[in-house]
Image 1 (cartoon, rainbow over the protein chains, first blue to last red):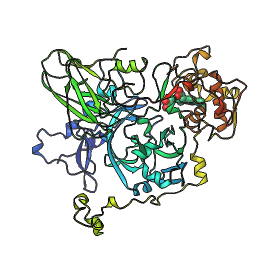
Image 2: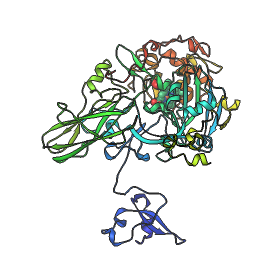
Image 3: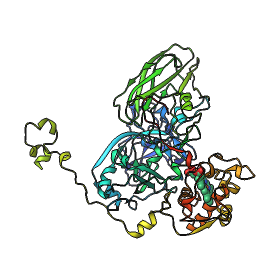
Image 4: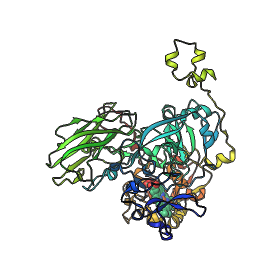
Length: 404
Length: 191
């Protein structure tokens, strides 16, 4: 076992690895130390670290979200499979992440119901539970404009988790939703008191009052201790830090469904209550910033649709002239990120690669141009265009910016 | 309990055994009500039920005027939304063509005057979320004044108009006729 001296103990700020130290009582515990001091030239020549209470990522893995003032994006290009590690799930909030004591947090359901009720977190956990793997995407998830953009920059506001909670239908039965109720207001307990109006039908269909994410309690950034989760719908509707549901006969017309999360669609018209996320895909490898080498390359990416399952993903390695059907990795789930891959032999010539998703409704992921044409030249929320990567002769991979 | 223990493959056993032996947890009829949760108190409802609806439901007592709202705005809002609400880091709230000075800010084209379909939303949003650095600090009276000010600054109501629970829902917003419901349906058409 490596000896830890006092200086190492004090260098907490720069710690990167985990090693073992003796506490005053002689108990072996893990402490952080700089990699250089901890890392052995030959790990077979010294005992490894003993079991720990909480595992950590290898210090060699630098997985980070990219925070701005209002959001933080998932590093899609660094991830494998279909699940997003909870600490890398994207964030979008309208006035910070609230600090909520779960023992004090309650959910009120009232309005057009027979029996208004207040549920503690413990109450919610007593109901029959449901779990579902599904993506969550912000409908403002699109950026372009320069070549040096990664998948994280372009569409890092989508992530996927297994969500567990109580089906909202179960709670609707508990409070007795009145026949005339058509919409419900969902309200968060954050500093924005975020509110959205949701059709009651979605509550009966598949809404989840979620208290867990990937096997543990929700992360604070994802709504701890309880959130609404609406599979396939724009992320903003899945109200986090949920404190109240009110049943009513008409939408509330909250600021978030009027001034925001609405899009101009031509002829001066503004589209509202655009809930479903249309099918989209993106190649996450090769992608900026990682360069590639000529020879065999497995093109990898993610595809998803808020309207059903991914039926097919097509990939072009010749700038859209021809398309090949990619292999879909099982499981291919409803309203979920689906992994696709296609083996490609790059001969070193300059080219562009891109993918397009086709979902179970027959929707084909459009180009940026098709979206603009359909929406009177406007860009805004719900932009899901085909994304192309330029492969340069020297192996550099760059985003191909969309032009009007 | 025996009925629950044999529940691993109910489908396969249906034809072999009586229903009593093959009942699984999932086939026990779910009760309509579990009896969890507790009734809400009147005090809790008053504290939590703060939303305002387009027909005015939820608006509290009180009244506001643009003249008084202007003063409050200058003190509590202008730092982030610019003088007269025409820009700044928090975004423009007032249509620039309505004022003489154009201030560069976020979304100067999407203001209360040009983009908001319901006047009740102005009251509801300011009361729940503003000022950004001190949400929930305004009195209902202040929110009425600020609502009146912003509606007047956007050229929607007269300077002399008084905004109350009765008058606010009657204010017709210029943008209301622009809003259409989602027309995307999936399938081959791009919308």
